[in-house]
Image 1 (cartoon, rainbow, N blue to C red):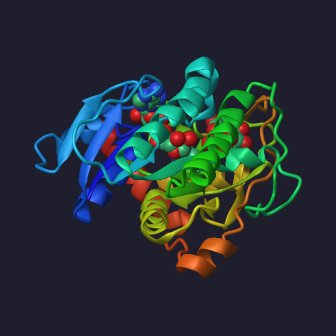
Image 2: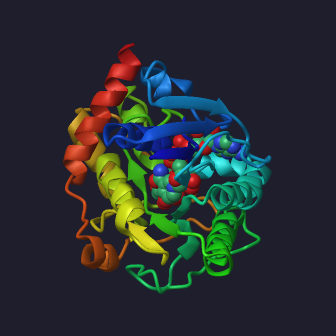
Length: 311
Ligand code: NAD
Ligand code: UDP
């Protein structure tokens, strides 16, 4: 099977390319390098089954030859990135998803949308099942990401219902691991980089807000399973183990052996108070659940950032 991964030079896209190639797929990676990093794909440069195309997916996508699937991962994902690129974020979620769906339709290909737990906004239901419609502020700063993804979901369902396209929607919860950019602003990379440099760990607010962190290998396993054997209804993927941000900071200090202090910084506007996936649906339908605990996943991620810092 030949598949297209948009956002291939990003954190998740590059891991997904690796996994698909390892499972025998031929992969076309597409990216405009807005938040991606060519180093994430450097090891694939001479891979016979991998092809990299430089393209902004908000523009018409031309791709020669047969294509069996489109996995649409292009979009800034870190709050720092999408607040810095609000309009490209809205465009890639709307126009980019439209172009990617149009390509899938023209090729008779399956389509998978990388959606997000942000569609639940600052949730009033906890943990979040797929049936929850969410609590999103459409005009707040995070609305550029949340509403783009909500629109992308609606468009995907419309192509499924109206054009009969074979689609998947995966709602990804906070995922971490090697290949996150050291300065991409997300909490796990921030804390590890700060700890390794002996700088203060910046806890936003009082750190009592919660997130549930999934190691990238677990997530990619879930994505491929959902892609191959799932259905069109939105599906949560994430690690249901919930931590406060302060607990995460303490764990990073312990695992790095760093003596950095913890400082408080202002809480970003509309920062969700809590977040935890209800993964009952994917457990039942596909038997998936994460295997790597936070301590083990952080150790692997710390190793990566140590090597990056040393290089
Ligand atoms: P990332 O920023 O590392 O990767 C995104 C990639 O998309 C980058 O390589 C970027 O250059 C590319 N891109 C952006 N706009 C583009 C455009 N117009 N045309 C072509 N390429 C474009 O982010 P990530 O963490 O790898 O996230 C990937 C996807 O997964 C995103 O769609 C994101 O919304 C979703 N997601 C990620 C998480 C997470 O925890 N990492 C959680 C929820 C959802
Ligand atoms: N956060 C923090 N310090 C940082 C970066 C983030 O305390 O240096 C907090 C942020 O306010 C949020 C949580 O960590 O409550 C997760 O933030 P992240 O940007 O990783 O992703 P989000 O889940 O908000 O999309």
